[in-house]
Length: 118
Image 1 (cartoon, one colour):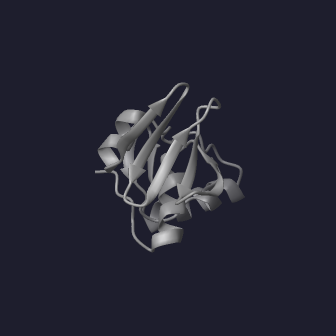
Image 2: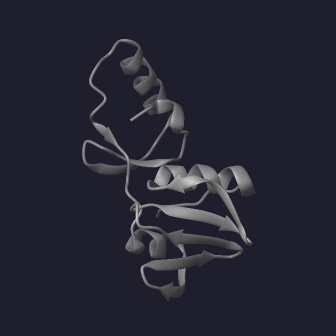
Image 3: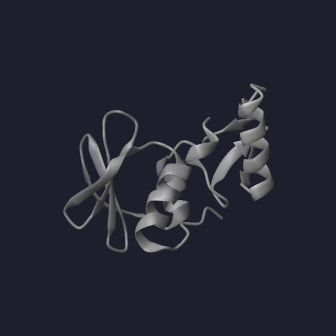
């Protein structure tokens, strides 16, 4: 996992435990990458329906094989590649996302607010 994709507050698995990243975590990851040390202790969290519901998304409608989730003015549409397209209104924003930290970063870049995984 590339530490450059991450920021403080992103949720990932560290040693199989869900954790919100700190500045120290990111610094450690950067040092490990620089010195080619093992980075496998940090893993992304895949997006799932249960996680989206936990974040506050609601199932807007279900059209097989796609399902659409809403969160205020934002929509996520599942696709066949085990990832989600993020919409604001009718417009797709960014690339498809498959991991929680990607969704958190995209949401933050648009709203300036954190999308919290409690």
